Image (cartoon, rainbow, N blue to C red; front, side, top):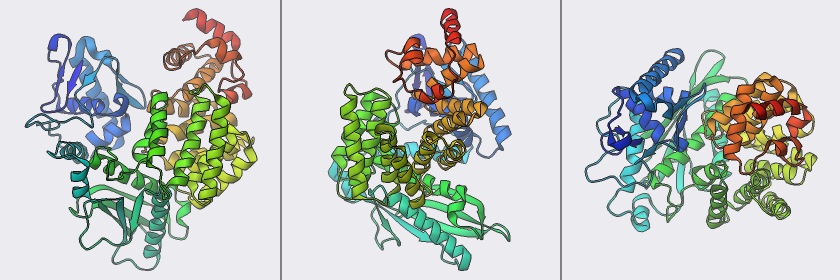
Length: 535
């Protein structure tokens, strides 16, 4: 199947036969999947963009109806689209598309030309996608011309409080601005301003932070991020759950809002620059390196490591060294390295170097904590670093992730589960949600809550189709619960995703990374004999 999104939307099957769905929203849904990483999106993401003005129940029903209509229109090809409780995806082996962030449209072509959906969220997504191509397809796309347009050096973000704020409201705005400043400063890639320059370049964003009264006990925040030159808003959200008397660190909604603002700024920069690094210095971490690291593909992880080396300077050195230590952890656990001892020593040295360079950076502290625990098995040292990370910046989900990990291996199940759930809450609706939901699954398993463990691990697996760890633990859990069909599905996924995987290694290799499943005694050898016989 081929899906065409440049110009008029069209889907073709074998021999070029037209199999385009008849409904506009069906076409839009297929286009959005075709333009998504791994051809996959969560149900909530699709609902938020195609039925943003409907409540959750109606949006969910509309999505189900649209999927049914698509399958009906596709006929024999209906199984190319798969839907679970959490996500919708296309078969990567059977679908091709002309979409690429680096694609150059043909003469007169426009992204999804003529596909107009009466939903503001879809229109905004379409505008952003078209805007990304507008930058790429410019006649002169050389580094010099891009620097001329966006300005040389780093991108800049001006953090602005409301003009009429007083007393408690103004105090909350200042607290939020301080929180966002910590998030952006920790990466060392964006310059912070506290006023918009008189004649700003196009590489300047403005973030407006405005407090408002919800009721006598609560204050809300309305945040919008815009281009300083055009005044065009590219991200806007509202949170209204903070208690007037409590510090901002006690509101998970506001901590999550700060993290998602940071993520949205990085995404917008990557759209504008097409992901390039020449001259413009777009953010490397959230924009490029971290998605590659958490792709869990050996080649992508290696490219992320090279990119961190190439873009390292004195402003981001500590954070980049910390992420190189995290890469060492992933290479070891995922068995991407043929020299495990050298990998361990390199990761430990990088973690120590990072902490020495910037000991009050929560990103550095959390990555170093993971290295201490998973490379050196020094749980107490890792726990101290993780504890400091969440005190330095409570809105960093990585800090809570490492804190949950420390508690997990310190036999503190309740503390581990609580911290993991905070990390999941902070990372909600961000590319890191799958990573934090995986940690919730492990913590729940350790706490004996098998129902929560299965649900969290299933969400993690659905959000990241190539992420193997949740599938390993799901295989163990399904076997313990006697769920033959689910266990066989997890087994088939591991056989496909993990080179050299065997049931014997899963059961008997002491180095196979399912130590928590073995500690919980949920692996039943007799079940696996039955499973392999039936499959």
